Structure formats: structure tokens, C-alpha cells
Length: 389
Image (cartoon, rainbow, N blue to C red; front, side, top):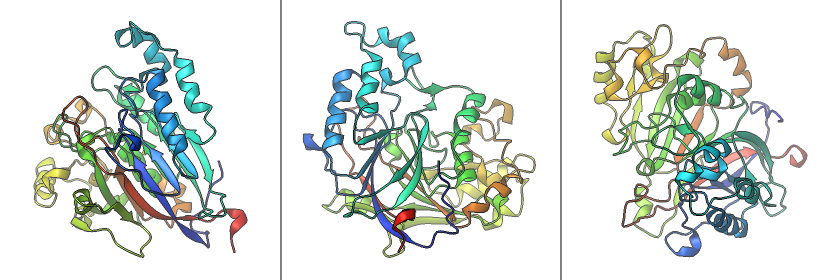
């Protein structure tokens, strides 16, 4: 994959990315929600209920019909047939009356002429239409989630989490993951205030992509900005929760502007400069500091670990006093000072935007169904190499 050195890029253009996830067999054609116009469409998984051929076929059809130059799709834990190993072992528990052809189900996506289907893989996207922004970006997409219940693409161990998220290339511009990073747009009444993956969050700090699009935790739907310290070991300097409620009850679209030409409505801004000075904060100090600055809807807890920054490790309240070895996702020992050398080409990456784009507002199976609006992200991306003027 080509490495885009953002420090050397002379020209960028606004690119409109429309983010959705967890549509669960619904579509814009059903009338529950509308798909706004844009340049790139990203679907972060759970587009079906059980991954049957007919469900996937319906989804592929409406995505192919959607007017976007690029369409990026990943699976989620509900796309049972797209996890070949899981379906071979467990498919009879779901589809015992009508077994599905897993290869045929996957082919609906892999053979699509207009969909980029990413199954824990990367792609380099070039927008070439003369009517579009003619930009380029690298994207990594993965369906894997921490195991909860008996569903596809789950992982249980710290070793699996480290291996999986360690696969994200350093030069990635956009990460599409079904699970949220831990502590970011992952508040769940079912699974707790911090239901995402700690190792994914650690990797996000290492890679510092421009944009992360996720879903899975329906109630965590929303947007956050992370402002990174220029010193790698400092971690997050500031987190900003972006208010999208202003648009949900009106005819307005949910727009997150990252171009600096207009501003989304921010709320609940907090800084961590005073915490960066110490890498040996005790759990009680961390809990006190966080409880006084972070709203309950985005509750986060920080734990110190040796010479590692307390900012980069996020655990739930119940985990705060547990020994590190007992945590469901251990703190990442790979984030060392040597990684700073690998960040040389990330000079321009001081911010990461996290989007949980769940369309289904209620948990799976809960009725009546309610729907969120898609989240639009306006972002400056590098102009194609052959189109710089």
C-alpha cells in the first residue's frame, strides 16, 4: 500500500464521508432513515440479522444503487456466514432448517463491482471522478469484536486482541472497525459504560488515523475528537464529545466538520495536561480526577502501568482495582518510546475523530425499533498524486 506522507502533502480537498453501521436489514428504501449525498459511503458492519444469502443480497443491492464514488463495507458479528470458521462450527444452531452457502454469501460482496469489502484488510482508495474531490486515502477494515454471546468474529484473549489490532498499518488514514475503541462512543446499558476494546484504543493511539468509524454498541452512537500530544508518550491531550442531538429531532443532517471551515457543536471538553506529568497515578487518584471531569455518558477510567502513560489505558469502574493480569484486555506492553520513531511521517496527524454510526438506536431485538440518522464527516484528504495543481 502506498504511504502518504502527510507532512509533505501540499494540497488537500474536502471529501464528504457518510458513515453508517448496524442497519440490521433496514435500508433507506424502507423509510426509517435517509441516506444523504456524499463522496464515500462507509458501512461499519451488522447490515443483517443473521447473514443469510437473501439478507446480504438485499443489502448489497441498495448499497450498489447508492450514488457514491467509493463504498467501503465490513461485516459485523451478525454476519454469521461471513465468518467461515464460525459458521462451519455453529451455523446449524442458527440455520438448521435452511443451511446457507457461506462461499456464495461472501461472493455477493467480493464480486460486487462497486463495493470495497474489507475482511481484516487494507485498501488504497483513489477518487477519480471529474465531478468529485479527486482525493486518496488508505483504509483498514475489520469485523472483529470482543466476544459477548455466541456470534461471529469474536475474540476472547488478550493475545488475540494484540495480534488482530497489531495488523493495522501505521500509515492508515481511516480505520473501520465494528467494535468501538474502549472508552470512546461505547456506552452501553447492557455491557456497561465502556464496552469497547482496550487494545483497539491502544492501536488508535499508535496509528493516529484521521478517522475511526465503528458501531456495534448502538447506544454509544455519537462522535468524539481526540487531540494527540506532540510527544508520543503523552497520549491524549484533549477529548471532545461532539453534540449531534441538535440534528436528531429536526430535518437537519448530522454533520461533523473536520475541515476548519465550519464547526460542529462541541460539548463536554476536558483536558489532561495536568495528568500527563505523572505516569504513576494510583487508581484512587485516577478515579477522582476522571469522575470530576468526564460526564457519565462517556465515563472513562485511567490506570497507570509502570512507565506507560495512564492516558492510553482505559478500563471500566469495576476493573479499576483489579490486578492487570485479571483485566479482560491487558494493557499494551508494545507501546514504547521506540514507536516514536515510527511516527515520523505522522507530523500532520494531531487529531483523530471517532464516529459510532449505529443506525438502529435500540439494542438488537428491542422493539419498537428507532433509527438514528447517518453521520456525515467532512474531512480534508490528500489530493491524488496525479491531480496536484
